[in-house]
Amino acid sequence: MTSAAGAPGIRTGTGAGRWVLAAAVLGSGVAFLDSTVVNAALPAIAQDFGAGLADLQWVLTGYLLTLGALIVIGGSLGDRFGRRRVFEIGLVGFGLSSLVCGLAPSVDTLIAARAVQGIAGALLVPGSLAIVSASFAHEDRGRAIGWWSGLGGIAMAIGPFLGGWLIDSVSWRAVFLINLPVVVVTFVLARRHVPETRDSTSSGRIDVVGGLFLALGLSGIVYGLIEGPPSGWSIESTVASVLGAALLVSFVVIEATVRSPMVPLTVFKSRQFSGANLVTFAIYSALGGTTFLLVVHLQTDLGYSALEAGAALLPITVIMLLGSARMGAFAQRVGPRLPMTFGAFGVALGMLLLSRVAPGRTYWESVFPAAIVLGLGLASTVAPLTATVLAAVEDDHAGVASAINNAVARIAGLLAVAVLPAAAGIATAGASLDLEDGFSRAMLICAALAFAGGLLALLTIRRGAMVLAVPRAAVADPCCGALLDEPAAASAA
Image (cartoon, rainbow, N blue to C red):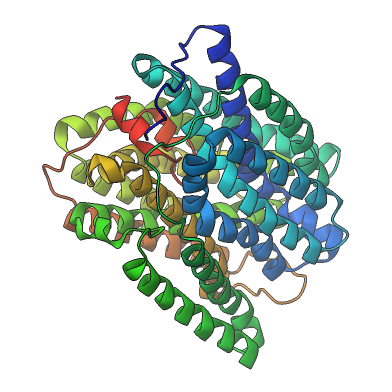
């Protein structure tokens, strides 16, 4: 990441540094809070609107669709037009769309507002870490990123408890409305205390057409995957799938021919980069499907409250926060292949254990052991994976490489939410949320995906592949994809 000449060199431990960190942490935290608690709100949303599983799939995929398709462009816009400015626009958009989500009179309105929320998130999420990276003096950048990631991890740990309590005590709508005061405070802090920075070398047109084709192509594919099975693949869902596939092919053609592509296809010439992204797709497909169905299953079939269901996977967050940095350092010594391989196998084992979660079994005998194994597997996988992505490309491409990997993770989760219920034989039509019959099959499918990720790591990652030291910032969002940016993460190490 390149800041303009004369960019601010704020020091940690100063008042100015604390204000910048506060704005960045709150900005990323408001987006992560939604990502960790919306799953827990799904049964309450279904009950309020009489919605079925297909509607709940859209509540999640509407957000992931626009976020995953546009997040690379969001980072580019910040570099070009000013990171603070784009961050502030993202905040306003996120706040307004959260208000509409909280007041939504129907599930269709909620889905549309979630899609807008994803667009705002694509502006907001890349800007958070980019602001920290560009604002602090080089010698303090690693320390600032460490503070940013640590405080963000605390927010992640608190999120399930806060969200579950709001759902149980107030309403699912409070999960969205609570964003408003956080957004207002963050906007004021950013306006008063965050210096404006931009990339003075950024040139060429921003690939808006590529982003549009990617978003529309994914929309068609996701529409077909969600609406096709319950309708017996009607003409409408079939046409949407075919058009979506055609648009995705066109997206690849555009990226190969446009002067300033959103996704430079040349980075995929690196076997390490391509392999790491295949592993990312497999692991985050499995993880996205698991987190979607598990929280719903715990509430609808096992009688958990929203608070209990939201906090059920807290051991994963704790293990990730405690173990990811250590595993990243270990991967630097021995190479990333073995940690990524056996970590993915551990993720698969954790999901196999989750297939045992059923009525009549307690949390401690079913969910907790699986969460421990899953957390250990993710801690062993995600840090080496992120570090391998950064090390696989030249420094000039590190930012876009990390952004591509982030988008791959989110799109993988998006497709998993769309495909998994039908693949597991779970009925998505109607207003029933009975997952008892298909949940175990779904977890076995997720375990197979994670196991495939381990095999891909074994086959595509070189034994002596270079690994960059990456602070916990790069692994602070295990359920939604690695965080963005960056060369800052690499250069800070």
